[in-house]
Image (tube, rainbow, N blue to C red):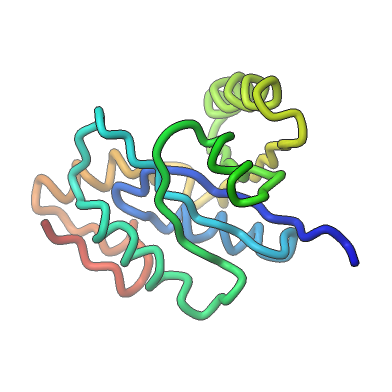
Length: 156
């Protein structure tokens, strides 16, 4: 029996965006299981509650049984070990993203030698979409519908 290819897609998902959704769906054929892992940093101030973020992700991927949702605290590599994941999925929008993500990937590799980071390019139409921008649009009563997956309604 072959080893299952389990990947973790970590983030705060504050909120989940069309870019996140697109990236997970792009990664779907590469892995047996993808765990969308919501990192909960108790020192960080989030705009949207943890339970709400989890419900959004579960809703977005409800039709995909190989996509799971989880919440974790601490190091992502420790969570990966705990769930048996040997891959991390990271999206790249720009070359600046690559430089930042490469450093994290190399540190993760030193902490967990069996862990590989898989970089996927965002779709061109999603390059400007970030959770920070969506939060800013939301705070200023703008229309966020083009930036979040269908069925996700941002409320506090």
